[in-house]
Amino acid sequence: MGSEVVRKKKNPKMAPLNPNWALLQQKLNLQGSKPKLSQHSNGGSSPTVLGKRKQRSVPESDESQVNVLAPTSSDCSLTDEVAMDCEMVGVSPQGNKSALGRVTLVNKWGNVVYDEFVRPIDRVVDFRTEISGIRPRDLRKAKDFPSVQKKVAELIKGKILVGHALRNDLKALLLSHPKKDLRDTAEYQPFLKESRRKALRHLATEFLGVEIQNGEHCPIEDARAAMLLYQRHKKDWERSVKDRSRLMEKQKKRKNRKKSNKKVASEVKNVPVL
Image (cartoon, rainbow, N blue to C red; front, side):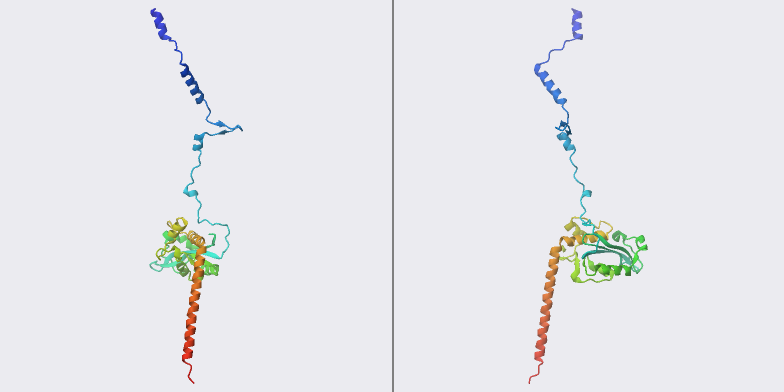
């Protein structure tokens, strides 16, 4: 008896499984053996819902966004509308007098039509690199001022000239341009804040949604920003120019009419009585 009891303890017989429990184990085994990829009719496989989540496209970063200042055409020809920007260097003993160091012209699509470093007539005391981006090496083989001045005058003649604070650029070039052909983003009424001018970088941020002039200025970038500001507001801008022109013409005619009437009255007054 004792040996039989020990034998039974060493090799106990398995108790029969409950039918419900056996069925549940069978279902679990079947579910665990299913493939993670579902088969298509063409024999290919497609990922499960979880797989699709893993493969979702990552949102584009800011670096991949389109640059609004990039040229909209590959045409580099001279157009009827030209934007200009200049960078200055410091001359005079204290370096506080500005002289032209670089001038850039872009066409209406933003393509560069002229970009030259300029060797000032006076000795450069301050290159103002932190703003102008100009370094001594840039002016070693730069063109002389008279040559650049002549070329720019030829390029902008008869053109709509676009820019920011153009009076300063034209002064540096010792040039003039018809007022009716100037489109200055520093002077355009809708761009003003309480009749005060805004910096070009602020206009670019507010109206174009782009940041410029973070550190050294790039005249190409600045000229493109001014041109794009003009192009986006061209319709209203040109309408305002025409309205102002008509108003000035009426005022001129009215003034001439008054002068004529005064002259006639004076002549009548001085007619001798017979």
